[in-house]
Every structure is written in C-alpha cells, then in structure tokens.
Length: 295
Ligand code: NAP
Image (cartoon, rainbow, N blue to C red; front, side):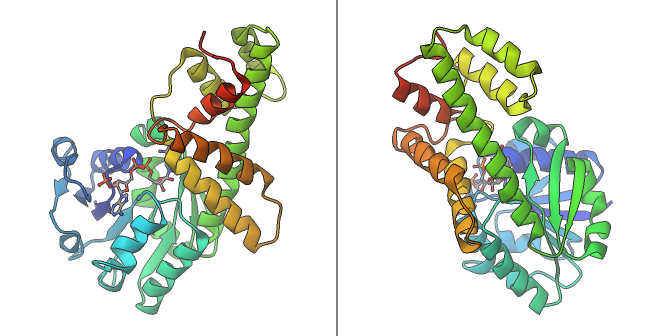
C-alpha cells in the first residue's frame, strides 16, 4: 500500500482516484473547486483544502489536470509545488500537455533530485472509471518500474516509451489519430445523409469493413442518437488540436489534420458547445452540410 497524493478531480482524475483506493492505496486529494469532495470522500479518499498539505510523506504525487495553464498554475507558479515536493516522492503527470511544458516541469524536479514521469492517458470516462486506460510513459525505466503499483490499477495496458518527454509526445501523436477519425466520421456521415443513405446501414458497414475503428463505432452511434453527453470535452479537443499543431510546427512536419480539427473545434466552442463531447465536431460539420444526423 502506498501513500498517494492526487490533484485533479475531473472526468478522468475522479475515476483514477476511485481505482487507486480500490487497489488499497491511501489517497489524499486536492481539487481547485471543492464541489466534488463529498463524492470522492464516499469512495474512501481523504480531501485537503490546501495543495501544500498533500506533500508531507507522500510516496507518489499524481495529477491529471485540464491543460498547460493548470499545470503551470499549481506546479510552476502560484503554490509552485514542483519546487516543494519532498525528496523520495515520485511525481507522475497524467495530463495531456505540451511536451515543452512537460520538459519545464521535469527540469524543476530533476534539478532537485525528484523522480518524474510524464504519463498521459488514452481512453475516456468509461476507461478511467473501469481502470482500463492505455497509458504512455516517459522517464527513467527504474522509476516506471517502481510506479507499477499505482499505474496498474488505473490501466489496461502500460507503454514505456523511453526517456522523459516521450509519453507526452506519444499522447499528441495518438490524439492526431483520434482527431482525424472524429473529423472523418463527421464528414462521412454528413455526406452519406445528404446522399440519401441510411445511417444505421452506413455504420453497419463501418463496423466490419477494413476501415473499422472503435471511434467510428462509438462516435457514429452517439451522433445518430443525438447524444453528445460529455466524455472528452470539445474544449479539450480544441486544446489538443493546438498542441499537436505547435508540436508539428516545431518539428517542421505537416499538420493539416490538426489545423482542420482546430478550426472545427473552435467553431463549436464559439457556438457554445465547449462542454459537450468532442463528437460535437460532427455537429459542426453536419450543420455546415445542412443535415440533421439524428433525424
Ligand atoms: P476535466 O473534467 O475538465 O477536469 C479538469 C481538471 O483540471 C479539474 O480537476 C479542474 O479543476 C482542473 N483545473 C483546470 N484548470 C485549473 C487551474 N487553472 N488550476 C487548478 N486546477 C485546474 O478534464 P478531464 O477530462 O478529466 O481531463 C484531464 C486531462 O486528461 C486533460 O489534460 C485531458 O486532455 C486529458 N484526457 C482527457 C480524456 C477524456 O476523455 N476526458 C481522455 C484522455 C486524456 P476544477 O474541478 O476546479 O475545474
């Protein structure tokens, strides 16, 4: 059993905390807003009112925060926890952030002799709830191995990607594939609808043919029911499209999918859909096509 401090009770963090408690770890958590405290206390985690209270005696400090500015606000600025974490604590950042922000936090930790892993996750609300995430990890191999007791209870598979930063880079590479599939199923269903095809039949073909993917099946089934209940918020998809573009630009590789995704996601966020599921991109596309996919 480990003493685990955790920051971030969002869609993903809440599920992770519950699974870490279930695995027998002693969890102490802090979240910016305290509205989720009573729910997380019910699953057996202890809550604190000040993030500094998380630091003493923790074996692991884990966090899953919305974006770069959230990580910076807590770890590099404000309470600046990165410069206060105790020696001996292993720090694991599960957020999806820019590899450059990840490198900045890693430097603060490494300069102080603190072990750090960047460990962003694939999967969404259901996988977080069920302990079935697919996690990509960068950092020293021995630190990854020591962290297995807290990574295994939240994951289906763990992928050690090599040196620090490689987890964050892999996450953006993977999210480029996610973005391309959400945009392509949106364009495909809009085209099919306008062409007079039955969308259930289209999805039946898409579920078996050599272009099938779980994203086509899941997003497709949701949008034809008009279900945009949030698993992965559109506003975070917009953030990721921007991160992928910046990453690709720095490495001088084409970013056409990220550019298209950003434009569509921004249109959705501007239209008030930021808190809906990222599949609302399909709604933006179908609105432009002048079709209603859920009729
Ligand atoms: P979420 O539900 O929006 O939760 C975001 C968390 O970050 C909340 O705890 C929020 O606190 C906190 N936060 C945001 N801004 C903050 C700030 N300035 N200072 C302090 N705390 C701040 O997001 P999520 O879906 O759990 O995603 C978390 C991370 O996992 C993101 O990097 C996301 O890209 C990544 N991810 C998400 C999914 C998914 O399907 N949802 C899948 C894979 C990866 P409050 O509660 O106070 O707002």
